[in-house]
Image (cartoon, helix red, strand yellow):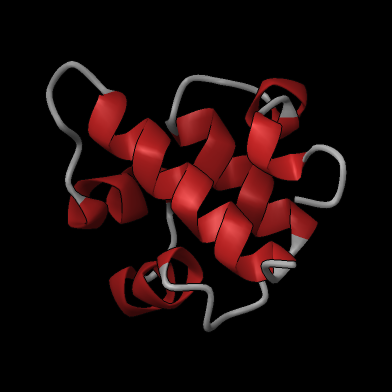
Length: 78
């Protein structure tokens, strides 16, 4: 079973790259008011992200927490 931190990081990367303008990691960090190096740690699953910071990132991705976690990678313990 993949670690939840890794799943969250992969989901952020997927949503970030799916943005029409292909949002860079640096730009996402800026919009979400998160340090760029911390964002790298989150996306690689090496950092445990707090709910507050995750909410800021999700908002910067123009979505919400429910939609963020409504992905097959978070279902059934996969």
